[in-house]
Amino acid sequence: MLHISFDGVVKSYNHFQLGPIDLSIAENSITGLVGVNGAGKTTLIKLALGLTRASSGTVTKCHSDEVGVVYDTPKYSKDWRVREVSKALRRFYPTWDQQQFDITVDWARIDQSKKIKELSRGMGMKLQLAVAFAHDARFLILDEPTSGLDPLARHEILHMIADFSKIQGHSVLFSSHISSDLEKFADDIIMLHEGKLVFSGQTCNLLSDYRIISGEFDQLSAIKESIIGLRKGPASCEGLIKLSHTSNINLNSIKLREPSLDEVVIYLPQGCSDA
Image 1: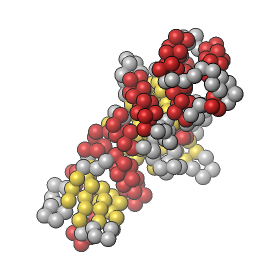
Image 2 (image 1 turned 120 degrees about the horizontal axis):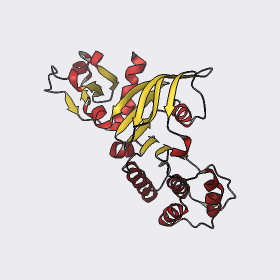
Image 3 (image 1 turned 180 degrees about the horizontal axis):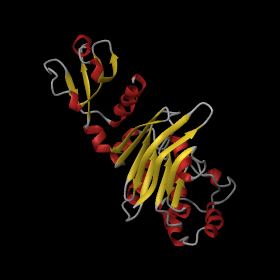
């Protein structure tokens, strides 16, 4: 079952265009959304939430009641107390489970008498997850949920997300600049650059298909057309290369190693810019 699909989707603004985008997110998966600021991540999320309409193409998604959203800060009234959040929202969700809300809030050590403006960033994230769990969301969309969190809060939220994705029929779309989080938890990666879809597929394939190549400039210059983002350093040069392009390379003084997701995110879009 697909929770959302984009078929030839384009969103145009005066000075920016996202797309065309063709991709889908299936159930029981965590999909990481990566790209530098201005790549189009927020626009893609808005399209997924129905907050903006595509200029062309089709976005097919599950019912809005099945979608849970976690923003960088809660969008509730800052003067509401935590207990008032459930009172205000449960009237909109026929499947609201107050017991589930209370269990999650208690587990997260959130005092229900506190006002929203008194919550830490991590507590605000956990409160939004408690709301999503209480209305039985099946598709969770998170925008930078772990940015700026202390290590414990980050660890707890990541494991809440992972546990959610393992429930039958659930899936997650997770935007983050912290590539190490996605490398550990994301089954699939969507990479955007300047509005273009650079990659959409399994995280393991993205990492296994490329290598970091390093050596002296004279050695690498002969194969520079195959190297993405070749960068000169004080002692050597480095770039990204497809594994399939390394079979005929003399490795006597050239080094190859597996990349991190962070390195792929840095280098791979440069191939689009160079094209």
